[in-house]
Amino acid sequence: MLRVALVGAGGMAGVHASCYANIENAELVGVMDIRQEAAEALAQKHGVPAFTDFDTMLTELQPDVVDVCCPTAWHVDYVCRAAERAQELGIKGISTEKPMARTLEECERMTKACDGAGIPLFVAQVVRFFPEYTLAKAQIESGAIGNPAAIRTRRGGPMPRAWNDWYADFNLSGGLILDLIIHDFDWLRWTFGEVERVFARGLTDTKLPEFDYALVILRFKSGAIAHVEGSWNYPAGFGVNFEIAGDEGLLEYNFTQPTGTPLNKVLRGTDEKRAGVALPESPTGTDPYQVELEHFLTCLENGTTPLITPQDGTEAVRIAIAAIESAKTGRAITL
Image (cartoon, rainbow, N blue to C red; front, top):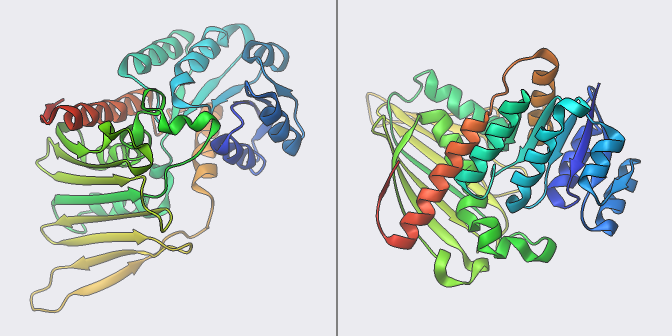
């Protein structure tokens, strides 16, 4: 049983707290937030103590795992402080929500701190654990659509609201490029390999964050090209979709309704007919957020390397920072 201390009491922290309640080898032992009322509300819901001071929580609870779910700009502080006290308190691992950090320098500091403490740092890029994305990667690697050439992803919804409206502050959130479509950057790099060039257009500089939009073009070293679209101005609600075209067929997925739709594979034929095969979306219906946290805790217990490493988290941030620079300057950025 691994004892988990949670940093943050906002929306994502609430998701993680509920997941731990359903994970057999996890026990949530405390919640910390600088907002006393928020910390107490989430802590009371799960029957654990609330804290407003991070070091006090660490000293009193001496947790096995620290899970950082606060706004992006403070990830580096809490991760590094936990790593500094890891040997003293017996902390076995640290998890942080995506994006890993606000800047590449902060990613490097976090990596160095955890490496120095000899503990793993897990970056919670949850899209890798969504069954349709996992299945699409498996189909691509099996050669189901041949050699991938063109990929299109879209992710959008209304701009999230949170404490002090921090998502609207570009200096804190990095806008939708860093906060939202970094999900796609991570999955695309995981699936298609390293990115060599980034070009972007967007509304980052409009000072109207609730209308933020970006279209990012990634060229991979493999030669494949991805068009990544993100929007915080989609009034119909949250939705994602992707199309992956290879020289033998197409994979496509579209989620716009509460029930979603299955992943669909369309293969090229020898005649004009095209066969569509519906692939199962999820055999268990298990929450992907729970799956990712279970994965990290199991890795800690078994001494194995998590699916997502600090390097993965850093590279996703690198792509996002390049996209932001491209959108601001109008230039393609070579990585």
